[in-house]
Amino acid sequence: MRMGTLIKIIVTLLLLAAGVYLVRSYWIEIIPVLEEILGTLRETKLRYVFLAILVYLLSVYLFSVRWQQVLYCIDYNL
Image (cartoon, rainbow, N blue to C red):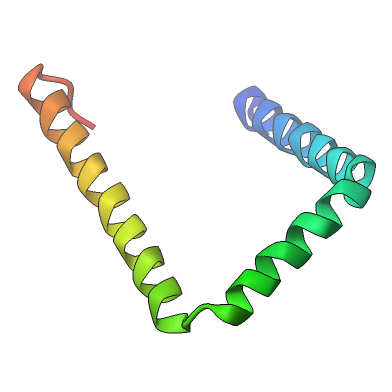
């Protein structure tokens, strides 16, 4: 196993451990927020939620295409 791969695995495990720690530490504060989000979603038409998600994904895609063009113009090929 190469050193770069080992470092990536270690960093991934450390980030995962930090995420688990943060969720466990702030779980009492996360629950009311999740309940509020679920309550709002129950009152909202699902069509609008899916439409908002699709518009968001489309905007992220177009933003990445724009940056790809900018980088191509300065001769930086991805």
